[in-house]
Amino acid sequence: AQTVTQSQPEMSVQEAETVTLSCTYDTSESDYYLFWYKQPPSRQMILVIRQEAYKQQNATENRFSVNFQKAAKSFSLKISDSQLGDAAMYFCAYRGYSGGGADGLTFGKGTHLIIQP
Amino acid sequence: EPEVTQTPSHQVTQMGQEVILRCVPISNHLYFYWYRQILGQKVEFLVSFYNNEISEKSEIFDDQFSVERPDGSNFTLKIRSTKLEDSAMYFCASRVDRGTEAFFGQGTRLTVV
Image (cartoon, rainbow over all chains, first blue to last red):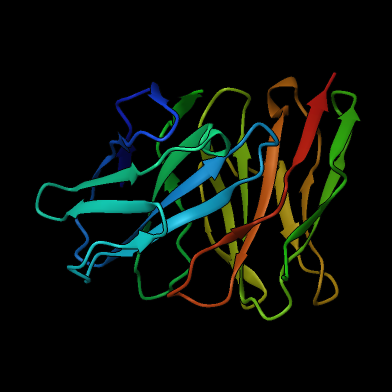
């Protein structure tokens, strides 16, 4: 079974600074997807960024980028120019690429990101 | 922008009662999911549904749980006899195909008393 590990229960960063959230995963599959979801206090789950394992290029979405290291099974999220609205729980998630394609997401335990004004 | 809609936003029920949580996935999506998040814990996969049948289910999804897509638009999760430990946030999600990300609803907070 796949596992996702987020080793930082909480991170704090000053507004406008850069922060990196760590995620490692364990899988025997060669094709899969990785995601970062944001969960603000409203508890809505919002997709931040996704990465296909077959792509070598790291995904980028505006101020959010990932460092995907397939051999190391590492998938970190970098948030540049942190804003107060970035404060939330961040979950790393894995989904396999099975033949059926209906696999559910496996989530890490989350990192609580605090933005200091 | 299309979104996944869940009702109700909060439901309180007595232990032993049946509850039905409702979801309207995005209209052209083909894969449907239910997840659970106990307060302060991680989000856990319950079940996936594709082509009008369950594709995959976790060990949490026991005989107390069932899912249904009764009319081609709604996607429901039924808990037959609720227990205190069923209290959690329940999220519905959908995606259009195997290569895309899942979109989540805003969640239903279930409180079993």
